[in-house]
Structure formats: structure tokens, C-alpha cells
Image (cartoon, rainbow, N blue to C red; front, side):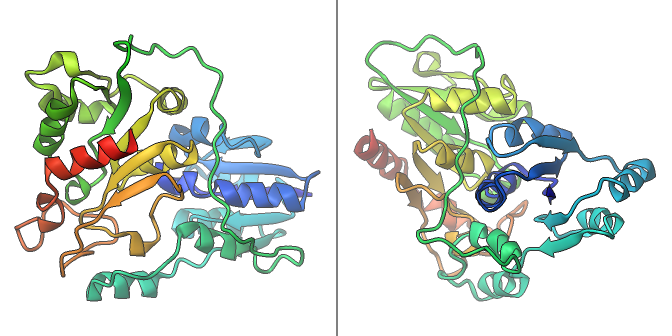
Length: 323
């Protein structure tokens, strides 16, 4: 049997597909399982431990025609957008299964600012397998698990006796990001007992500069330094991970790290909470939250209460509790 899984982006969404790949491997242990994604995420999929071949997405006509002759028995579309629809259309001889996006439920949660909703996006991804005769949803829900790659990562020397704490200050959209000054005050309060690694993409380096301004001995700004596999290796060496509702939040959960996550314009009810018993979520629940499915560039009410109501002292107390 030959199976193709499609999820083109992005970081957190791809992490949440790992349990589906594991379930397919359990159902069809001798199958060839391929995963189609964008080149930027190939290294991430390589840590799943369930995939025989990673195929890099190409927008060209030649690439799409090539898929028509790939001989897949089963195509699992976990992207469910035009790009993945076109690919699955090319695999016209294959059985194609798509996941239920729960678009109407999520729209209702945002419009009515509901605080309860979808258990997890993993449940929605697993819905793609409902038409397989041998599939039975498991209890408890399977969580993503990543294999830490065997890499030599340039990891900074850590002062002895200090708790290694990673901070991911960025997110795709501004209304998902806690103000960096709050993180700077948190670092200042805990610099005697913790050493902070500021992690993220190169475009987020400036956030690290804000957090460590005037307190260079408290940590190091590593934004833009690591590839995704190297980032996974780096996270595995930490004691605690702090992030917004973002892709790195799901990396930390899949590695079973103690973690703290801030929710601003979004909300766990939308199905993106980390699947991790060691996760602590800071959600202030103003009457306007959530106001967006994926976040936006500015608070619609201009007060940004969902993040501004989080105090550095609250963050410090939670870090001390988890450390």
C-alpha cells in the first residue's frame, strides 16, 4: 500500500498532524507513507519517525502531472485548500480523504467570543480517517511526539545552577504576541535563578533585543540562529519553554517540555491548545476574546486587554511554580 499525506504549512499545524501519521503507520505497518509539504518544513516532518519519504511541494504543472503517475492507493488531505485540492485531483486513481475543518464552528466561536469549543485540531485531522474500515478513535487523544534529531547544535554555555528557560517572543500576527516589555520585566525578576534563551526566526531578532536590553548577562538572543531540526534539539535541552499561541508552542508540547503559553486574540477553544499535561496557559478571557481565528495586526478595540491584562508578576509566579 502507498499513502500520501498532504500538509503544506505551517509549523504548528504540521506538528499537529504527527498523530495521524502514527495512526496510519499502526493501521498499515508495511505501507509506504509519503508526506508532501513545503521545503521549509521538511526537516520538521523528518522528526516524526513515521514517514518513508518527504516530497517537497512545487507549484509547477510538471510536478502536478508527476503526482498523477505516483500510484498512491490513498491520499490524506490535511491541508484542505486549493493547492492540496489540485494535487489530490491529479491523483484521480487514488482514494482521497479530507479532514473536517469545522469552519462554521470556529466562525461561531470567534463571532460570539465563546470560551468552549473544539477539543483539539488533532481530533479534526483524525476525522479524515473515519472512512477507513480499521480506524477507531483512541482514548485518550494521541498527542504529537517528535524524535529529537542527532545533531551537533551550537548551544551556549549555561551558568551553573540556573534553570534553562526558552522564550519565543514572536508569532505570525501581532495580536498573538505578548508585549515584549512584559517579558523583559520577567527576565529581570528571575535573572538570578534562570538563564534565558530568546529563540525564533531572524525577523524576530529585534524582539530579543528588547527583552535583553540592559541585562545581557541574563540570557542570549538566538533568534535566527537555528534551523527547525536544530531548534528542536535546542528546545530538548531546556527546562521550560515560554511562548505565545504559535508554532514553537506545539514543538515544546511534542517534546514534553514544561511550558507556559499566552493566548491573546485567539483562544484554546479554537482547537489549538498544546496537547501537553505540563502546559500552563495564561488566558485572561475578556468578553471580546477570541476576536480572530489566526490573529491580526491590531486590536479591534484598541485596548489589547487579552495581553495587556497579563502582568509580569503573574508570569514570574507561574515560572517559579513550574521550575
